[in-house]
Amino acid sequence: DGGITQSPKYLFRKEGQNVTLSCEQNLNHDAMYWYRQDPGQGLRLIYYSQIVNDFQKGDIAEGYSVSREKKESFPLTVTSAQKNPTAFYLCASSIDRGRKTEAFFGQGTRLTVV
Amino acid sequence: KNQVEQSPQSLIILEGKNCTLQCNYTVSPFSNLRWYKQDTGRGPVSLTIMTFSENTKSNGRYTATLDADTKQSSLHITASQLSDSASYICVVSEGGSYIPTFGRGTSLIVHP
Image (cartoon, helix red, strand yellow):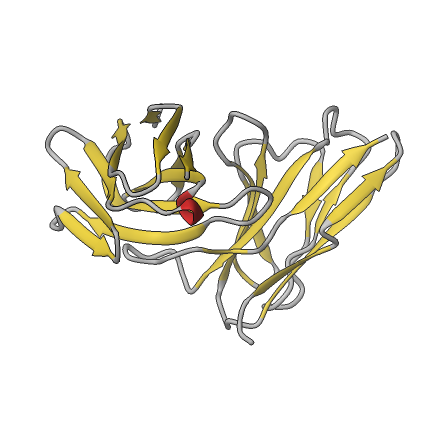
């Protein structure tokens, strides 16, 4: 099946630990995105990448890091510097960033800091 | 600052009834407007996408309208079903950069 896969679905982390969320797509999409969703708020952009080995910060990049070594993969690391990491994280991809481009979302990872 | 405002914040309707969700935006320049449906604990799924020249787009029982002059969009759901219970998110992309701005969503609950 073609699609975008996030893992794990649920993740628990102790305070002070780094944790990496996985995002893989087999849609041959160039652009990939990470969003954070908190209750009652719209999705906020953390990082995005338009091409392999290149990525840009979104609105709330502090405390997060990403890599784009392969077209199919865009992992997100939540570092200990992120003050309030408990949230629902969504990864998305699109064929490019054109005018009628549709973004496809993964099923999300719910991260809880314990 | 680009903003997307959705109303109402939440809505409860009976199965079989119609409803309309609203989206107002200040994003400029405008590229496109999309409506997504997000089930609880899942990723959003696209319903419609409209560019500047399109003022209506349908997807089954979902019909979206766009008035680019007043910067308003609506999503009309006809003959609602229990499975329509979800959050509906309006997303407006900026022209040139195509950076999307997300609304906070309207939570729709359909009761039998």
